[in-house]
Image (cartoon, rainbow, N blue to C red):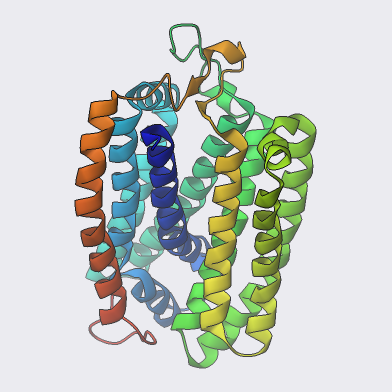
Length: 338
């Protein structure tokens, strides 16, 4: 039993959970300003209000798992992306404050201010997550001591920015599908139109990102070539994406949301397969790259933490399932809404 691989997979599962769950509420935030009128905007916020903080538990858990299992990679990533992480943190704070404070005052300027900050936080956070992934693909300047040797502006290269926009397109598409599942009436029909605008945006960005990834980093398919059975992930990804418009056309929003979630899961899995066994690729010298072996904690630590994870993960899953079960059904903007 290779504990390093197990922890690599476990962190991947946590990131998939976060991307699926917080992805749709970031997408809802990015779409927020496209709605019109206070009632529509309250309905959008109410669709994620009871669940957004629980969604972010998955990110915190993934960060904790990375710190425990691969401390060298954690230290390098957080030192290299420090300013980006601070900006991301402020964007998430803006979102949280907007959800809680927007409805506290009736003035139009007050609500418009928080609407703007809510959408701005969602846009920037979505792009920054993608920029981080893009840099993980092409590599960042890591020296022989495993320390970051670059700058914040050096991370904002064309390819990482492309991946950032691609990530925004995924979340907007995912968010619109979620809203189609949660709304009714005129807003439901409006959201259906959003799906057929965000879906082509996502597909265009998907094709462009794939082309540039294969051109700039052909090693991303090395593991697929070594293990041909893994190409089934590509097929499943395409089928999941294709089933989204089909399900919407058939009036099956639940299936469309599951397909969207499966597409996100397949994309993150393909990213993990592509970079494996690296955690952080060095653009200065491949020998400086941090892998699941040279960046890992001791075998005893990995073993003990795995026991804790086995005990703790069911509680995270139970909490997530119970919250979504309690707040199932359509949303409305009434006197008890956000």
